[in-house]
Image (cartoon, rainbow, N blue to C red; front, side, top):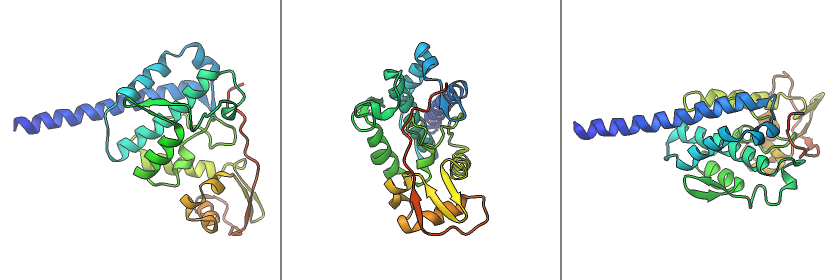
Length: 230
């Protein structure tokens, strides 16, 4: 009985810790993100909230299931903001040497890069093509950063809503009659969407236009300009 009570208290402490982080992340995003654009200047001038969240990411314990998935999505997006703030003012992430594959961030006491966190941690633990719309890259061409944090209890509905919002953004998916011009994300990560021949079907699933898209599509040039509030 004593062991069971201790285990319950331990599990409860994990839940509260995860909730505390997502709550703090939510407040941070609502304060600093508007229509997908980030107030990097304001965050750099007053970095206490950012640093507190990064400290929580560093000290966090390992979670399971949707709690871990939501935590890692939030951590990734937080690291992206941190990476830009460290070098701000800057015109975009590609102006920072090794932004995705060299610059390191601390996750639970260990160093990781954005590419490692996305491709070796998140993608392997939680293979889900919709992650490409929840994770951001600090550029205008990326899916817009949501102004609320991902949480375990609402994760499925949040990821579905985000995917639908991105797919139906006319700047991201450009439709002319039934022909598509689409983001290079679908080229770089085609395998995650079932292969290049299945990309149009994936878009069709979420697009609100009630037309049958041609399986043929083309890519427009990716815009790496910083997603900064003017």
